[in-house]
Length: 117
Image 1 (cartoon, rainbow, N blue to C red):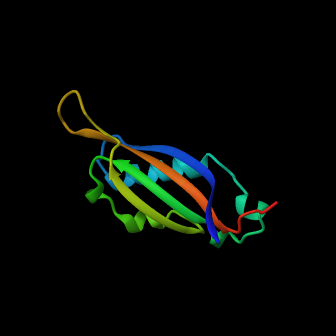
Image 2: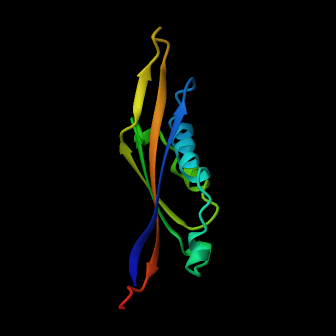
């Protein structure tokens, strides 16, 4: 079997006032997922649980993100999440805090036999 990429999805999420890195990351995931209605598993005759879902989140403070909350977003499949330094923290003009921006890249794959036509 070979892990075969089928879909790439991208999203952005923010925490404008509360500086909540988990909320921004979760919104980025939802932005990527909820803008698509893909029936990839059905199209190839796989159960949805067979989807291998690789997620990479770019955010300025990866250690401030609650991974369990992010994993709970996925209704099916086998998600793995990697947090990396990225995204943006934008300081408010009056210095009262910052807005947090996270970026998500999601790749959906399946273990598939290569075609030998």
